[in-house]
Amino acid sequence: TDDRTGTGLALFPPGFRWGVATAAYQIEGAAAEDGRTPSIWDTFARTPGRVHLGQTGDIACDHYHRYADDVALMRDLGIDTYRFSVSWPRIRPDGTGPVNPLGLDFYDRLTDTLLAAGIAPMVTLYHWDLPQCLEDRGGWTVRETAHHFAEYAGAVYDRLGDRVRTWTTLNEPWCSAFLGYATGDQAPGRTEPDAAFRAAHHLLLGHGLAARALRAAGAREISITVNLTPVSPRDPQDRHDVAAAGLVDGLHNRIFLDPILNGRYPADMLEHMARFTTLEHIADGDEELIGAPIDLLGVNYYAPTLVAAKVGTPSSDRFPGTEGVEHLDPGLPVTAMGWPVEADGLRRLLVRLARDYPATPLMITENGAAYHDSAEDGRVADAERVDYLRTHLLAAHRAIGEGADLRGYLAWSLMDNFEWAYGYEKRFGLVRVDYDTQRRIPKDSALWYSGVIGRNGI
Ligand code: PNW
Image (cartoon, rainbow, N blue to C red):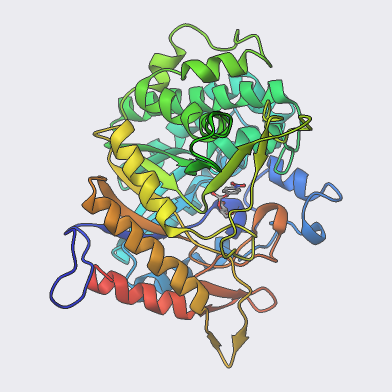
């Protein structure tokens, strides 16, 4: 599997899973239908100045009503795995109380439609849409939220567990904790370092409690998705730069990976967190619970990170305690997000995971790029996205050859959608969405990806 065949094809292992991913608030719309209540993203989007042009997910891609067509489109592209998220406020409109059967009905219909199309559903239970009523009670900064999450997870499993094999607890707890509670770039938009570390822990605890509930209920494949970035020092010979890279690696990657996969926070991160919080929120037994074995680690990769120690006066920090760190422009081509493109970063990341957390099956649960595409005569010639996907898939293929136990690849995203604080301006889709007509147009990248899936290789 690890090298090119005589036909010039980089073949992936037999059974490699190929798919696409989305998230509820980014595509569904129908924000007030069938008993759904507001999530923190509805509130955030309605707060002036938070989201580009004040856009919201009220309608988005109208997937709530068009899911059958969207599934048919995936089937036509040959997609075999579809990762979607379930909206907590649809399932438990008051966060904790009675289950709303109409909310579950939607995911039930979606699941059956996927299975009928030969597509394996992969459920993410939390992709950032916390019920607003729970944020009003402290959100992820309080321990109760983790317990409410596990109860909600159990309710979804009760309805879909007989048909859905793969269960992902959280999507990108780093974003929820640090962008949500430290930088304020994402909902709920708070900027309190102490809250961010408590949120990170309660998210991890929510993962542990939900995983335990899912396991007890019979779930066979339990996972969590983290967004990771390989962090490099500007000068690998300079111990200050190396220390800066170690800190950022800790805050971005190890603070989640170590508790989940080793059952304990890294010592340097405990020390770092103690600068901002008492650590009293970390109860005896929490780390053990968080570290219970999982079956698959979901990895979202977009871009590498380059840092140096800041020379001169330390200045303000976006991430708690990084006032001594300078984030550098690596001088690589960038996407429409301004994110640097380096496919080899994905290879390094996967190989590092295989080395530091051995025996962990991996799946790329998001990878992709926003570009300024345009539609002409019903065609979107997104050559840059094809290039992004091709180079990253080849990097993943190389990582497999170097020992990474990679089981599948999911492109972000099936279609253009509500790109959080950037609204509809940034387009990550393999399929273009015309937001005036809701027409879908598969971009060149979708057709190219379909060919890759058909050949199981590049
Ligand atoms: C991920 N960062 O978000 C999310 O899982 C998706 O919902 C989102 O649409 C996609 O990536 C593209 O943004 C991220 O600042 C947001 O490092 C921000 C970062 C990483 C991932």
